[in-house]
Amino acid sequence: MQSSQRAQASEHVPTQSPVAQRTRTGGPAPDQADTAEAVEPDKPEKREKGGDDVTVVDPSMVKRAVSAAAVGNAMEWFDFGVYSYIAVTLGQVFFPSGNPTAQLLSTFGTFAAAFLVRPIGGMVFGPLGDRIGRQKILAITMIMMAAGTFAIGLIPSYASIGVWAPILLLVARLVQGFSTGGEYGGASTFIAEYAPDKKRGFMGSWLEFGTLAGYVGGAGLVTLLTWLLRDNHDALLSWGWRIPFLIAGPMGIIGLYLRMRLEETPAFAQLEKEARNKEKERREAEKKLGLREMVFGQWRAMLLCVGLVLVFNVTDYMLLSYMPSYLTSELKYDETHGLLVVLAVMVVMMCVQPFAGRLTDRFGRRPVIATGCVGFLVLSVPALLLIRQGSLAGIALGMAVLGLLLVCFTSTMPSTLPALFPTKVRYGSLSIGFNVSVSVFGGTTPLVVTALIGATGNNMMPAFYMMAAAVIGGIAVLLMTESACKPLPGSPPAVETESEARALRKAAKSAAGAGSAAGKRRVAESPA
Image (cartoon, rainbow, N blue to C red; front, side):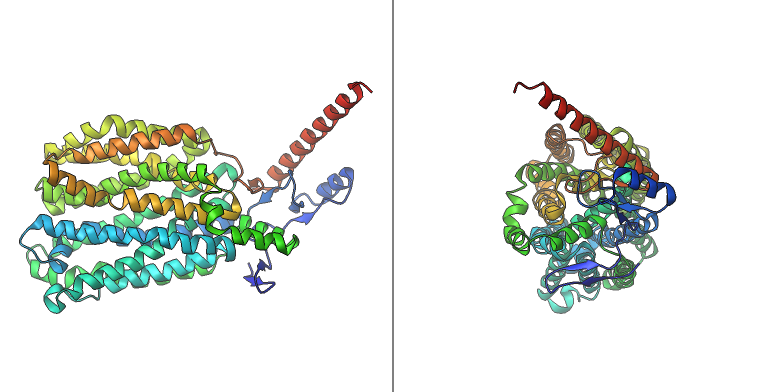
């Protein structure tokens, strides 16, 4: 695969498309086209813009795209996982106080602050991804995320530099949050635009597999450190906590290498080519629409995106980010055992994730998401009661129930959310909607729930919060349309083989012929 190049100052076109090469067949008569197919059955064909356009994807390129996107997501959530699981230690390092709850609130407050700049990152990186390409922006976000995470491991403690320690921690978190604003929307768009229509759910599920892998890596490393330094807490406070953050540097280099080897997505390459072949004034007019078109021009899809992301992220952050601290601070459960339980639940989720992705391709996205919403509405209270019961079996069972319900969202959202928006604004609209919802509802979950428990004294608040999110998510599911096995809006059908493409083209010709014949009959039967 050759790299994309700029054809003009303001636009660029890949010298070789990441999809299988196709040849124009719009000119010859139908019998000539059929003859060409018979002579060269394995040579993919290309049609100009029209209803019978079909994209034949390159399987090796799809695998590389999925791997690069998943590794980047793993890098991002490795940091968030480490930060959440080592939150109690970070509170002691950066926010000295005689009140453990105040320390935890300060730590989660810094955690939530990063989410405040995520929409800004989405507004910057999203439109750029729609204008200059998905691959370039994903490389930039990878560099920024790795740099921000690595920097946290270098910050001196509060005992060394005083108030500058929490300030520097906040700055590093803001860099992470800004870069993350362009990460998920870009990664899910990248996979969705590469994947064949019939496997978009399965391919997209690997993005959240990367998320879980990052969490497992973060949780496993924190658990190992906690166990190794269990008799030397001072070592954990002085240098032990830095190790997970410093590992982010090499991980970022690996992720950047994988992403730099990718070509642009087929959908973006097609849109880019069409834009170059059309009048320049129209292209300039589209650019001027900017945020207005991405937000208000897609208001219904944007609201659905916010609702779906809300239930997805509230339950996600509740289980994977807040529960370890909840077990330790609220239930006084042994910290190491609590981390091991969460780690085991995430491993189970990783094993189930690809199979759930296949289910979404077979039965649809809506039934799977609806199952998760109903499950959280009905089972959140029983699951939390099991967790509060205190035994290892009760905690494991309660966490497993919540984890399997969460898979209903992790397996569907990477393929569902990109299908809400057309190609020309997909990256931008998805990044803005996703990050606004995450910032307001998802990232604040640990802070809000901790504050609610402190204000009410009711330790069942996590269950009630998840139930409220499930209601909102359920409304969004009722209003959304099914997207499984259908082309993305603004993109032609995408298939794996040329035989599938020929079948779709012939079906389109038959449908067009039937429509033409019906039109002629109506004209003939109409009165003079």
